[in-house]
Amino acid sequence: MNHLNIKEIQEIIPHRYPFLLVDFIEDYKPGEFAVGYKCVTYREDFFQGHFPQEPVMPGVLTIEALAQVGAVAILSKEENKGKIAYFGGIQKCKFKGKIVPGDKIRLETKIIKQKGPVGVGEAIASVDGKVVVSAELTFMVGK
Image 1 (cartoon, rainbow, N blue to C red):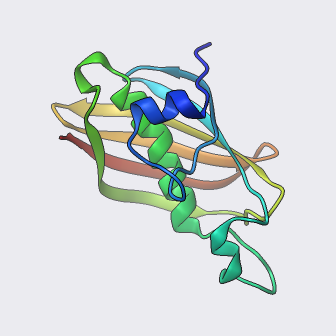
Image 2 (image 1 turned 135 degrees about the vertical axis):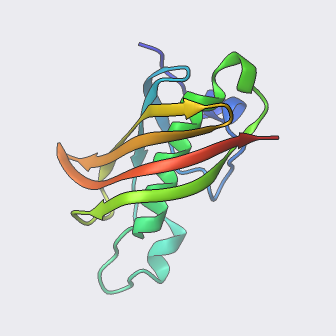
């Protein structure tokens, strides 16, 4: 297994606080897949407004976290080092559960297609073994 801590993740993807949404990469294979985690705390800035009476992590941020894990898989390939993976599209997206403070989100993105700089990742976010978000994420690698 290939592990990455937060500093090693920052060497691969350009995201920084407060927008770096991955705390740890448990395993990855360049160009093929990555599995990471986000530990959600009540101190997340977005909980101030989403929603104060019932804090729920915004679904779009879960999609972004899945994209960041996918970016680790793509940008860890030797030929992509120092580049950026941009969103190209989101397909087949389903929100199946809430993410709340105290949850540890498992983020898995598997690259299922790639032709040149464009590719597609199959992404699944789960909490305690239950799928909470699934989607196909299209990306484009650029400078």
